[in-house]
Image (tube, rainbow, N blue to C red; front, side, top):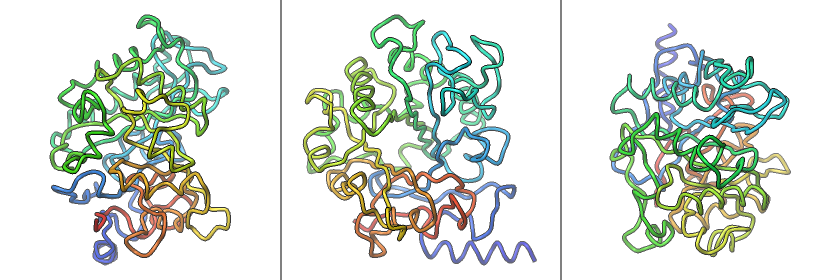
Amino acid sequence: MTFRIVTIGLVACSALGCNGWGAVDDSVGAPRDPFAFGATRLELTWTIASHNTYEAANTRGDDIAWHLQHTTNHLELDLRDTTSYGARSGDWTVAHGFFDAGTAKCGTDGVGIAGIGGSLTTCLATLASWHAANPGHPLITVWLDKKQDWQPADAAAVTRSPAQLDQLIGSHFADAELLRPADLSTTSLRTALESATGGWPTHDSQANRLMFVLTAESDCAGNDRLETYVTSRLAEAKAFVAPYAHAAADVIERPSCFDDAAAAWVAIYNFEWVDSDDDGECDGAACFQLPVAHDRKYLTRVWDIDGVAEADAASRRPFGGTYGHANFIAVAAPWQAAGAGGRGSHGDGIYPW
């Protein structure tokens, strides 16, 4: 009887373009069957992502790799340079707030300070282990939300600098295993994408690879943090950056607090989904620019998705919505369709243009 119920859920879900998780909570069930994006370019698809993947409430399994097996290939880690527990040498603590210990969903190595909890290094090791055990997997994106300024930005690798972040990523994944900015262009991502023949790679061409994306607060301080990484690393960067945008000029010209040279390396935007009247649809400046970014072939992620109506609206443009054209829709509970933090009705799919 249970098998028949799940099968019915899969059939109904497929008609809406989602990834086959079905209508029931399968958080302890069989591994998921990822949506077959095939030869479709990244900017022409939408997919459910995990918000604050490292938090215990947002992961049903023992570690963050559980999501890769059961819900989504798109994860988020918050990086703190310091917490009330102290700081690490050349590494970051994966935690949300200053008074939070590092996550237990990447191990509790206590590197640097006893009892501090999980580090970025342990999270990368967890991902690397799953990656090695699952050759040919679909593209994995890892969104690194940088909560504090670089410590400092231009110092040696023993500090928490942009160069040290790239060193840590590179110590776990070879360049051939990564989708990096230089794979699209060594001079200007924006120019490369906006050309008549430009566009992101196809999903099938990125099998067995990971893509790291830096985000920060939706203000000038956050964008300054991302600009610092860009100007420090340029074509050597292991990660992309995804600033916020509140106005069309932030997308068409350059993000707030970026100079023109740094803006050339911006091809992804991180939008807060604002829904003040609780009807699901975007109704604030923080997400009005989704269609503008899509038209220029930039990738987009939305966060602060509080319910299934908002999750649906974020990809609803093919179904009649106005602003929903996100590529990555971050929710707290992607293992369930309904309920708080659920993924909604539309799952993963391909935009018709």
